[in-house]
View 1 (cartoon, rainbow, N blue to C red):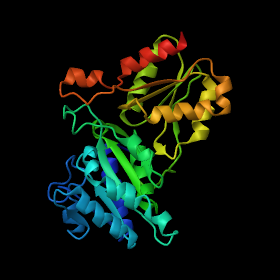
View 2: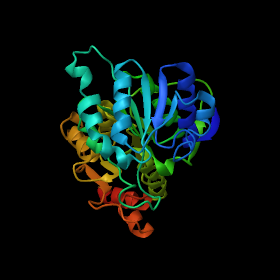
View 3: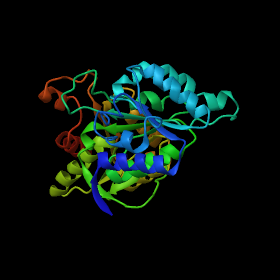
Length: 325
């Protein structure tokens, strides 16, 4: 095991898969000479050459179309969007083409396409560069959506995603890149669609993912000082959801708080709450399932307002205490 950053874990996963499979190639804006907006692909151009590390024009719709066609032809493209917000420029290619081709062609083609997208707020990048748009893609049949919260999960799930024959949105929160964690030195993959209990507890369950999962763990430490034993469940994959893990934890503790940075309205939390309500866990609940998501506003530029727009460890702790009253 080595202690490395989230960014290094993503970089290692990409490098190892490029070495393992000659059909894997990367494309996106500034990922070659510049090494990626967040430095994840630094040195890749020199190591693998321009035929496998492709700097593209500023045209998300254009290079996403190249990736879709390449995937249908048997290659395994990994697209990097400089910011996840720019996915709006390629929505037709992702949602109407990549997501549907395997179904519409009766399984005659695969679609091994991974779209990496740095997401989330906390960097002062304002409303057009700070969004969490994952719920959009969870609503599209044919797409899988992954949002890991640790370096270990990021590497194992990205390697699994690249080996998949289905299109995958892989969101990496920008504030996680500098975080550190233990990662195995050898090759490993993690199962897509499996949640992970990051902290065992008995009094309530906090369900989260990505950067908010790290805040939930800090909130659990705060709650522990008041004698509250919180379980923290990391969804890791948003589509498909791990229903067994969600229902099992809800039945165990009887109280559930779902926290995420993306806007609360019509979000992932609503789907998780509905899943619990439609299951046998409903009859074990000691109170209503609560959602705690981002405010229904564009992300502000001001650091103080930006922090107030999304859940923080302190506010997750407060919401959990309210649930226990």
